[in-house]
Image 1 (cartoon, helix red, strand yellow):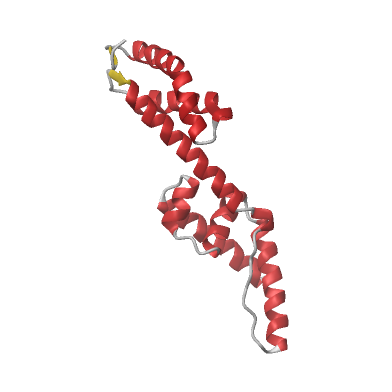
Image 2: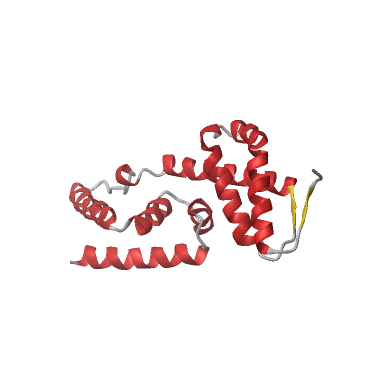
Length: 171
């Protein structure tokens, strides 16, 4: 077999792509092992197949190197996703506020903080994720990259979460 396949039809493309991904699995296993993801080989290979099948509609040539690059990127994405999940423990995330030296201010701030913490926990998971990450100092761009969203989507979710929190805090 050469460096890739030439063909014309979509069905032939999908068939050749599936064969190529399956043929490369032993080599892809080594790549997955270097990323510490050997147990996820089948899932990652399937993800690569699906992404390539979905996002290359007009292609009529598949290179083995392209499969390796796509597979490596899938490993990196999964590793980032797992790192994020380890970083953001939503139920136990610290939601700290600074307190003033005045005992009355401290008491009021603690009460408000408790209400805010409870309100954040009541948010839906997709809103809670962006709020917790933002409160931990992450930029909109970083949040978008971590969660695989567009920056505008992060902004929209933060806006809607803030609206919910304002309503809850004023009640």
